[in-house]
Length: 128
Image (cartoon, rainbow, N blue to C red; front, side, top):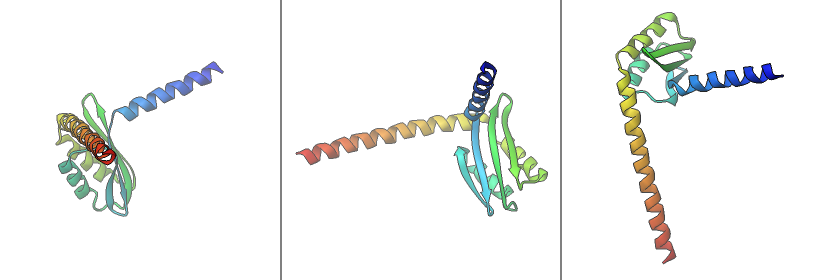
């Protein structure tokens, strides 16, 4: 019984750690590339769309690792296109991802702050 519980907890921790190191997830359906999870720089997304224009379906994941970004592909993506995606990922340093996510968080906090202030001011205007 305890062995099963330890295995389940261990697998959960591994899954959580892998998910927390995810940079992005892309899905290709009918030739259209969409970002399903995470974030990647706009120029990198444009390069990926260019590389994936011949692919009809599949998925691509990017994970942060100590040496850089690891890109894996599955579905209808052949080895040549997968290697091209890895080469594109090497063109963008990890600092690009880290700097942009900080800027995004700052922008989200600012936007959320303005939304709260405007909601409170509208509420006070309605009560007068």
